[in-house]
Image (cartoon, rainbow, N blue to C red; front, top):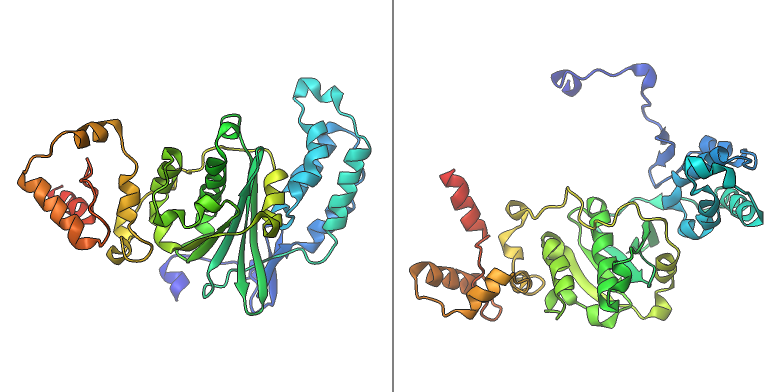
Length: 343
């Protein structure tokens, strides 16, 4: 059998076969969706009001496990964080008040109120990522609009750090897009998706050059996902209430790095036909990010060397966009394969 060939053994007593749903990691999983485990929810609902810092932290830890099911989690949890964000030497300052009790009761009510689930993605339907930014936080909602209605797949939000709060509006709105894509890229996979933003200048930003180096740098770092973007649509703020609310009610940031270590530009997995034909000239976006060394090189007259001529010819033959200045480093697929062959 397949298991025997892989030297894999299973314990029949721990297996569930031909069941309609199963409990896994404190979640109940069935054919339609994933939801919190009923027994775990009951255990949380039965918890008494915390009287110590330890008990309050334990409650936050339990409820935090299900935060992806609660879109307004950060707003509701804010009073609890206010009294639990204490070090060991300041735990005597813990004080439970009316605001904390209201938050405590609200969480219990939400955990027993239908609906409380996230639906599985439909791989035949594009995702829709709606993002927004405020001067204090960024957030986004990943969903799918299907013939059977809207499917909510995930909620994401975080706080801006001191540096990010000084960004221009276009930079904060762009950060919301790129951070959400980075956080959800493992969920989106290779599926196509639409981006919705309430910032008009970012409409279809992936097809045009934006006169902002920070935004273009983020675009460069996520270039491997550009072929999956169907469109970047403008959604007026009046119709963007959900993402706008999330961006203003956020959880404490655990990391401000929008590019996790697993993020990489994988040219070998990027089909050649996607480089220019689907969403405009991606190469033009790449060359918009110019280093100092590249700027100096471009300022000098180009020699008519065979290599320069060859590179220019290749660029024009594979892309219908306007002529592009030869980049300082050649990262084309053919060049990489040639170098690998020489190794």
